[in-house]
Length: 364
Ligand SMILES: CC(C)(COP(=O)(O)OP(=O)(O)OC[C@H]1O[C@@H](n2cnc3c(N)ncnc32)[C@H](O)[C@@H]1OP(=O)(O)O)[C@@H](O)C(=O)NCCC(=O)NCCS
Image (cartoon, rainbow, N blue to C red; front, side):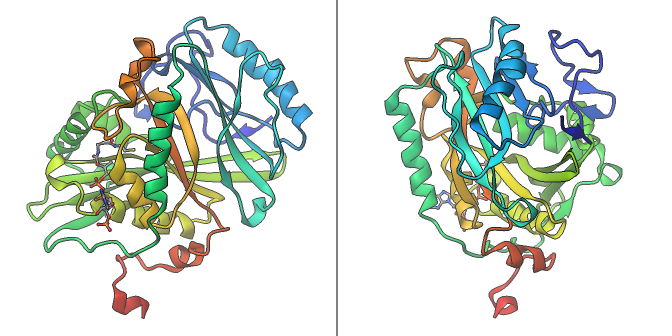
């Protein structure tokens, strides 16, 4: 079993109670959650898990599914989605035939460095009522393909007077919390983590293993934000550390001018310096600009998690209107996996990159 440094479990130990959303100064992080044992996430109508074994054979994975993941899924009548993250030997084919739930690999991160030869597979099963039509899936895939066409380029510099900074709880004011809450209110109709109120933002900022970065405008107001979630686990004597970039949001007046991409560029650099085994981000498949931003930062598209969790907001492809979805599934959004690992030719660039955004002259 994985020995998890970070745990997102319900402290009561009872799996069938809704998880507390905010604990004192600690946040239950549905994005990372489910480490070690399957977790019921009622807001996303799903079971989410991170397999505690490194998988070497298809049979080993089948055993895990049948003895650990599926029994947990059976306990919850209302779920329409199962998602499992698992480290597997690269290239291993995981057959879904004959399984009680139709789980298959939807996305993968190809690992490098000390995990060379392994993939981090993200496996999902969407049950009836939560399956998108082929048409919607094709639209979303075309959107991803368009984004994939963009190649690495340097991000834009910040306008004069704007500043990017790490958002540390001790430095933030009540006005900052309000400004951040406003950004999240204006960015999402529904989100995994409630962040619309200043006290919710405060709990989020104070959460463990957070690496939030913001941009302030010339008046000192925070206008764009994104966060890196740090997670570390051990499989026997092997450690796996990942950095998940999420909680991206920008005030509508400050979108599409490269600031989210600039923050992610900075986070990629920070994470590469910290030597993570994987840096990844789950980006709304229906929303163009952040996917293009990921591609321009040199991240690699690894697949799409279909109708994966509760998330909604502005979108270019209207997946939640798909007639095949039931009422509850209309809150769910699909997410594209984009990653950067030591296999990337850009890893050294990011690792050796200085804190300031680069200029063309500095790279010459
Ligand atoms: C997601 C969000 C933070 C992204 O920020 P953004 O300001 O739109 O994205 P950015 O401008 O930083 O980056 C996008 C890049 O793609 C480019 N781009 C965007 N749309 C483009 C298009 N249609 N064609 C070509 N390039 C495009 C931008 O110019 C930018 O590249 P640049 O840095 O070289 O200029 C913002 O749109 C938002 O708050 N959305 C609502 C909340 C949300 O959905 N968040 C979750 C996303 S997973």
